[in-house]
Image 1 (cartoon, one colour):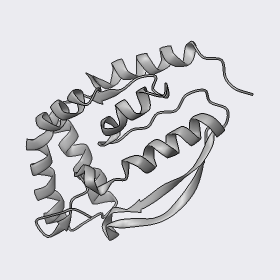
Image 2 (cartoon, rainbow, N blue to C red):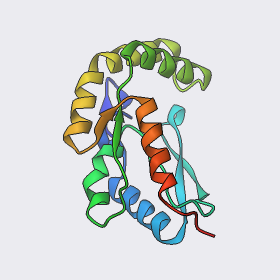
Image 3 (cartoon, helix red, strand yellow):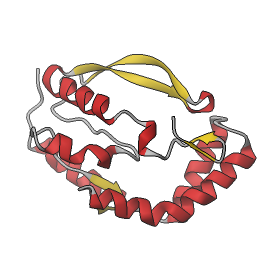
Image 4 (cartoon, one colour):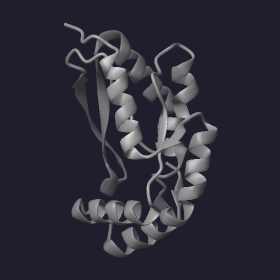
Length: 158
């Protein structure tokens, strides 16, 4: 795992298995179900897998900081309906992340605060990277409208 300041760097794309993610997405597209990893950030590792079933839905949303890393790998075989990078007020993102991480006791509060400030500062560069990889920057409401439009155009599977 990549490390930064003596800690596992969960913000680095090297902490993620992009090939396995694309393979899982392909399995979901083909079969409607796949095993997905469960991570314990506080333990800095994957701790289990769980079954994920689309339950007949014609679409699914793959989200996360690394989703843009696989936009092209999903676009080439026709598995991509849309790719978006959320554009939010940075202060709101900082507060949401900090509240989540504190509530889940992911790390020591002091480390979470220091990490949160670093991520706040890095956010514009992260958004530029994601859009450079093929994701479109959009606000949450716009993404929800677009996903709703995609769903409206697809009949549900039995």
